[in-house]
Image 1 (cartoon, one colour):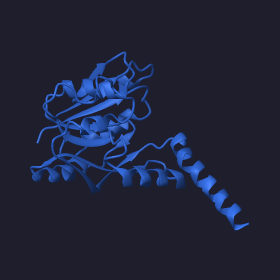
Image 2 (image 1 turned 60 degrees about the vertical axis):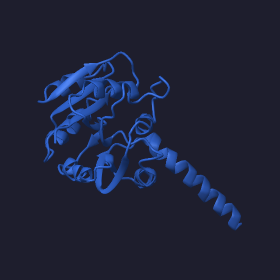
Image 3 (image 1 turned 180 degrees about the horizontal axis):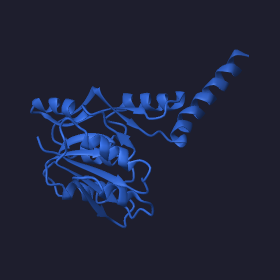
Image 4 (image 1 turned 90 degrees about the horizontal axis):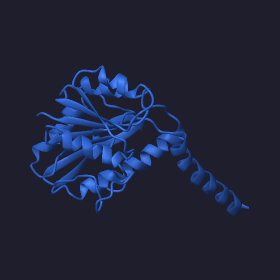
Length: 213
């Protein structure tokens, strides 16, 4: 089953090589990898261009939804895998994901995320996002779907969001979206994302301590 990969990028020279390598090492290899770059000022495009099967598209618009839109429009296959530049796929990811499409009602498959660098807060962050996937969190780092027969994919009333663009896409998918818990990818969890977990937990701990007194 032929599929295209779409990766939006902006200054991802430290991550993009490992991401593309993991995709080219899939047991079911991609037909093409489309990197949609928002005019990176580092070596992102140079690194990506060295890999086989990679096509680079550049846009001056720094908007992840719009970048994914351009990539999906340019893809020559109806089956599309969305990936983020900081994500690494185990070699069996696509093979196992495709098994879900034996059900003719399935139009999209996603999985879970685990942190590249383990910390307690990174792990909690991933656990929360996994629990809410796919309906309340953005899962553009590992989302395999059949392109719907519409003119646009990631817009909401003509606006391309900076986050939540996969939810915009899901509104246009006519069928079942599956979270396969066998699937996981490694992804980068930033210090900011860790803090989003740490601060509420710390406040809850302080509140509980004050109640004990």
